[in-house]
Image 1 (cartoon, rainbow, N blue to C red):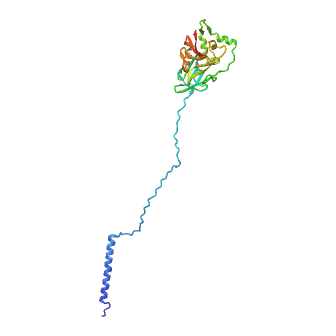
Image 2 (tube, rainbow, N blue to C red):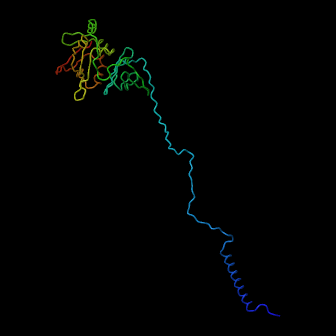
Image 3 (spheres, helix red, strand yellow):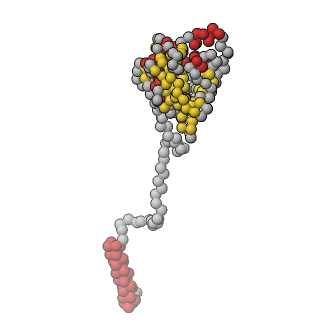
Length: 279
C-alpha cells in the first residue's frame, strides 16, 4: 500500500494540535478561576452626587409677625353723683380744685380724696378722680382760670352791692377789723365770687414761688374793705409762708375754723401786717 501522509508531517501536525490544546486548557483554567460567570457592561464611575430638592408648600414670602399687642383696657369713666366741681386751678406744678357736696364745699389738692374719690389729674375744664381702678370725671360749667390767674373783666358795682358786700366787715376801733364768719363762708361756697372781686398772680423770685401778687381789687368789694390794694404781695398767712400752692390751700380749707387772721404783705417794698378777728 502506498503511504499517503509522511510521518514527519504527521508528527508536526500532532505537535501543533497539542500546543493548541494546551493553550485552550490554560485559558479555560484562567477563565474559571479569575473571570466572572456572566458578562459585565462597562460601568463608568462618576463623582456626581445625587440631587436633593427641598420643597416647601408654604409661601416663601417674608412672613410678617402677627403678634397681637393687647392694650390694657381703659378704665371706665363714670360720674360722681352728688358732687359738683366749683373751681379748678391746673398748673404745671399744682392742681387744686374746689368741690361741693350738698351745702359743704371742700378744697382738694392732687392726691387728696373725697368720699373715696382721689383727685388724679385735670384738663382745661374738668377734673379726673379715681376710685376702685376706675376714672370719674367732673366738668365745670364754665372754664375758670386754668394756670396763672388772669384779671377778669367786671362791671362796676352798684351802691346796693357795696352795702351787701361790706355788711360783714367792721372796725372794732383798735385798728383790727372784725370779719363775720358767714362772710368767709360765702366765698368758700361760691369760689367764682373771689375771682370777680380780686385778681392774683404768682410772685416768683429766682424761679421760686414767693407769695402771690394782687393785680386788681374790685372797688367797693370785701377785699378792698379788708385793706388790700393793687400791687400788694401776700407773703404769709398766720405766719405760714406762701411758698407753695399747698400752703395757700391749707389755709383755704381751714378758713371756717380760724378765729384770728394775720396777713403779712409787702407794699411799696415795705413789709406790713394786716390783722383780722373772725366772729
